[in-house]
Amino acid sequence: MSSDSFEASKKRSDEIRADLALHPDKYTMLTGDRPTGRLHMGHYFGTIRERVALQNLGIKTRVIIADYQVITDRDTTEHIQDNVYNMVIDYLACGLDPEKTIIFTHSAIPALNQLMLPFLSLVTESELLRNPTVKSEQEASGHALTGLLLTYPVHQACDILFCKGNIVPVGKDQLPHIEQTRQIARRFNERYAHVFPEPAGLLTDAVEIPGLDGRKMSKSYGNAISLSLTAEETAKLIKKSQTDSERFITFDKENRPGVSALLTTAALCTGRDEVEIAAEIGNDGAGALKRYVTESVNEYLAPIRERRLELEQDMDYIKEVLHEGNRQANEIANATLEEVREAMHMVY
Ligand code: TRP
Image (tube, rainbow, N blue to C red; front, side, top):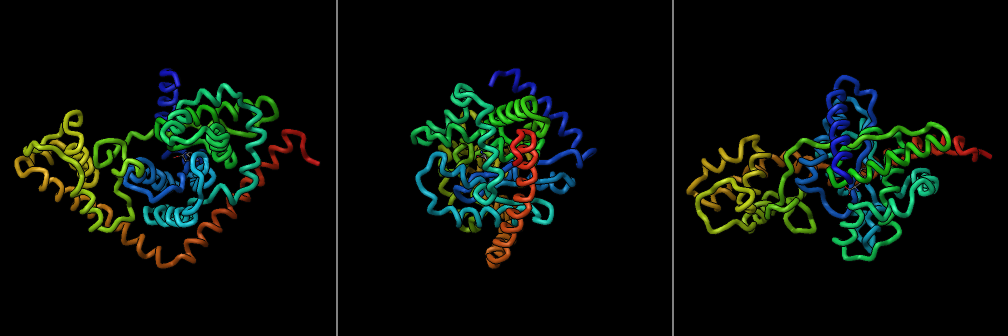
């Protein structure tokens, strides 16, 4: 994506952010996750916390567990049911409230998926092939470019537009998909009749929590602290994280990625400043730093984990939340598909 469209996206995002609390009823938020594993602190600080805040502002909030996105670059759905249920547990433990937020899965919403057909007719092969995020995801997966991976940004447009979502909290890497979604909405509205809003990405201003090695936190890098870990598992993980041979602790992202990642993790959990924490630990070295980080993380996550353990005991409730979310999402999707059929003169 060119830099001026990034500027345009950022400007739109800032304007909306300033308006959210003033006019919550103007907004419908849609965002989601691929159920490929447990949620970790990167998800929490990057987006989950923000979803909860939007929900509590009274904005309509919808969260999709994108199960069909799992097979864009994988050959198995072996653990998908377990991953989906655990994702619901993670969401609720973090504060998403099923009385306010609709939580649902792709595979249970036929009318959402049916939007894929008209939407695919609104994009060109070269637009699909140009998407930089699709390209890098395909390279990272080491898997052939499947038709579903190539077209998943269009499927994501279905996720957003079926409920007329107009704000989508996303990281920068998802902006090309928002741009594609805006184009699909615009083209549909011009070609047939005005049905869809042109959604805006809501870019987070939050500091990104690094993984334990300083790279982006990601399960596939093995540097992630999952919300579902126990306090002991967390301590072990932090203990074996890579620091360096210099004893005196300083905050220097460039030259000391491991030490600095630990400092940022503690800073986010305690609301303190990295440099201040570094100065306090100073000559006590990496061992002391790790103990401090472990304590901060475990303290921060304790209420989430406690709630998680309670929720795990009641799988009937978890299933019921998803059933009810799917029921509500189907109602919305069916109504939108009806409008689409009318706009396309396909009501028989
Ligand atoms: N692709 C997103 C991710 O990997 C998840 C997702 C699916 C999504 N559908 C969406 C995000 C719609 C925003 C809007 O994180």
